[in-house]
Image (cartoon, rainbow, N blue to C red; front, side):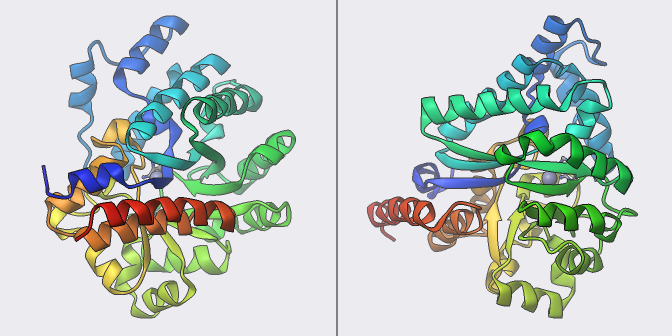
Length: 339
Ligand code: ADE
Ligand code: ZN
């Protein structure tokens, strides 16, 4: 408990870095394995939790891709999305821009349309039940080649009116953003927004490539940007939003302890930082747990928390009027929780 818990719960917020496959809780994994008669390498929920000890990104990715194997039908993807939105609504997330990894599923013979229609059904349910809006971001797996990414973009064509943008995730080191320059250029011409994971484990040069070669509209993680002063100044000057994920960074050993997390340095340098959960089922918490972890480590105060929530809307792909409406509610919450 911190003195900021009530404020954190009350603040309306957007979540901008959430892999829907990373919201697959062990209980749902078991239920879907049973429903689909699929094999999983665990017998109990405790065994699953015991396996979630990672010392780097790749340790996590191996388990994350294995877990995703239980997702097979449109109903499975809908159930996955609804389970996330129930948690997000409880955390007062009013808008979410969610990543999905179609190649993880099409490689197993699940058609793109099954994944997309299931997720879209869950998104519609969130709007109806919770007045929680959302958009989809299609992520390319960077450990695969650009040809595969181009084929995935072609698969997505019938769905592109319901997909807001493209992203880049999976194993970062050894797979620089420039490897995907052509597919990102094509996505840009199609009117899609562009985001990319960069500077999570990879060097600041990867962040520069994401900006210059992929023309990203938003940067996922970006932690290692701070190693390069010129880059940091550029991110601040251009108002580039960074989707930072504190509990993920701790679990994947991007930081050695929460007290070392760079959020305060990022804020001091004028970066547009947002707080997000990344893969909440694997990293021990949803978005409010991430805000609370920063507060508990003494890294943020009331004004920082309000700024982080404000940034989550400013960094979103919502239109100006929608952003203004969310910020007006946030301002009212700030007044109710005076310093
Ligand atoms: N896929 C899911 N979570 C990821 C992360 N934190 N980094 C890269 N790829 C991911
Ligand atoms: Zn991520």
